[in-house]
Image: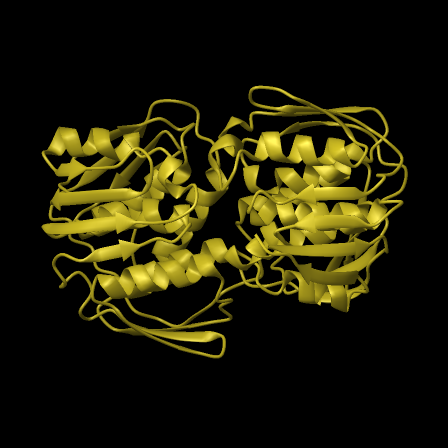
Length: 426
């Protein structure tokens, strides 16, 4: 078992933010569904991205990886029948690929690890029941078998479930012979992720009509067009170092698109709500915090950045409330329980609600032993918290960061972070 001892130290310098995992997933899928060859550059080969690459290869795509570039040949995609798709721990891979795998009649099996089998798939099961697709699953782990074909039509979906279900259908329905509609029955959450999907589809030649997130109209018989694409920097990963700036470090983040559609770009507005200043400095962004004040945060549109936002809230004067984040309970771990428990261990004052957090500000953290729950975002949030600890922070199971940001601790150390690693037997 691995541990990291992180000695309290402010970070200083410039860091190149890794490419967006969300956009890389989408680009790989769209390129794979194109009848041609595409080159996708600036790719970070995290475990989640590898899962999507392997999944598309299982469906017949030919993909070659070299340095930070992948060449995608989609001319044989969807021509494989049968087989197994291993999603590892990637929820995006699973939920995007389920409908894609049955664009043509197919018999396919999905497997995975960790808590992925606990993530609900009822939305797809209802669709399968409605259109006559056979399926079976295991309640204890991801072991899903599907036999059938996706058909066009009207799909009624709740907007407060994961947007990944909606994106999965948006990828798939344009390739069917008939027209389709996705009708949203409850207020849409995570709109930014839907925007990313629709934008990527447009980049690869697919047209989706979005009626104010209440209805999506998808014409059938469309065709993806292969092209070259460069993945932009990831605001969800930049959030860790931007938050470090808000609580006292001096870090400039490079590689971010000012005009990005990424929903996690909301981190800039959230930090401004706490009283921090967002500064454009040359080709980078930095955040300066001074006497942060508590705020009321709606996390429904950007749940992934809430763990590290909680670190900032815990160091802001007053009481912060973070609302509408119940979906964090069904991520790699129960992130609401995990971040409140671990921050409280190091001297924060966090109250856990059913779908939110109440955080009472303190001046500093004391440090001590914490664990990641094998969740990449918990691990990175706690690493950022270490910069405001009095004593060293001992982080258990830190290398779950490979799921999304394999180079995080290299970047952390490059910025002056003081790390010592050791291993213990089970």
